[in-house]
Length: 68
Image (cartoon, rainbow, N blue to C red):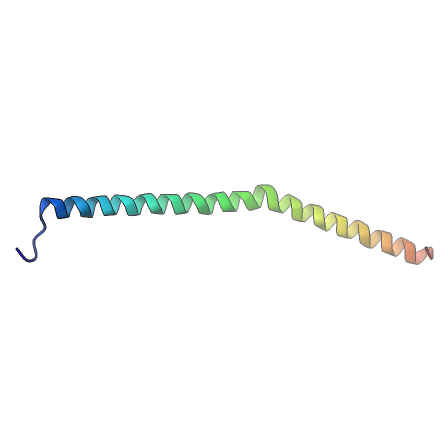
């Protein structure tokens, strides 16, 4: 019949909905993992780069002041 769903159609719709929920959970976990990676690894590295740049700038000012 047109407009009615068989048991197979309902089962497929249910499985499709479950698959969509699994995909959403995977994407949420992926996003969380990427954010945590940034906080745990990238932030300290960027801080270290900033410290290195400040030390380099200080060394350059020292050399300019004492004509090295």
